[in-house]
Length: 413
Image (tube, rainbow, N blue to C red; front, side, top):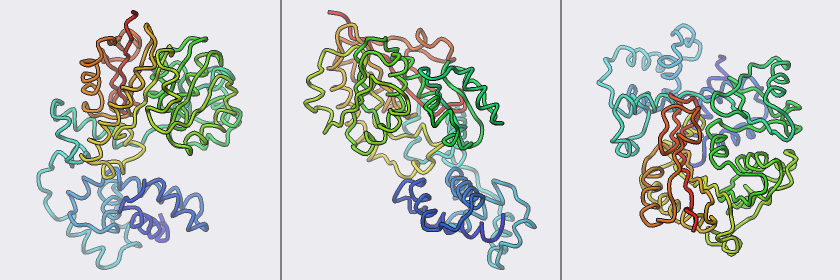
């Protein structure tokens, strides 16, 4: 760490901390405005900024009213445990005096938000979880995520992909639950490897891969990915169907649909049909009512299960935004359910840890939709431990992002 790198990390953190925009977007903007920064500089800045965000609630308990510079110093000293002599070239007299006082002060008793690194608005929604489990969950979400890949079975096998990655000198191992997954520690530049460039693998968290396995589309099915986004799960569904049948990829964002198109081309799939829709009751959806074999609803959600990748969501979501999301989720689920033919399957999923978005959303849906029944996840994914009716993945238990999924079947007429 050089004084230049530290000062750049400080400036970047100061620019990002209002959190008006997603942290990764703001950091990319900072890098574009500082084109002279080298790769090592950028890595140091990114790791330092995201390190502060991951530990910010604890740091602010330990150092109330700290400035961005002081938060960065506290992170270096208290979290990364860098010795004072290593920091000395970076410190002004005022910095040294502040750090000395911080280290001399006796810490008060840690509140739950500091121990778990979860904001106070989240904690009431986890009231049925033991406090020790909340702390374990929060700390699991605080740790950086590894890189998970999904093998595109149209172009490769997992064994072939592992061999190619290991031959390139990278650490790579099979994921424990998804038969299509590969896990790589760190952040290797996979987007430059021929295996990625030629469509043999896609970046996708193992938990996300399991959603496709729960939907289990058959080769000649009609399938809808209701909230397709950039299409990671859409491509998985198309590959599970061996590029046969038909997959409709619906989304309300033209940008996300456009982002799917180059990925679709790289994948070699011919059974995926991206469709831009205006809303969940678009006429394109109504034409398919009662005709679809399998529907995936990866619903818009708080995203709190992805804090390993997006720690800034702790401050960019709120109780008010959660209430808006709950209404949208219910409306989307209602519309998606109309597509399912008798005997068909609907998978409702979120990357959230909050019961309001997950189990309670399904409970409310089932109360008003007696034509649907729950298919226990434990019977569909026996390789995943600690599952019952619903899929609930946690980073500290399953080494995935936080995911929820419910499998619903429309009872045949």
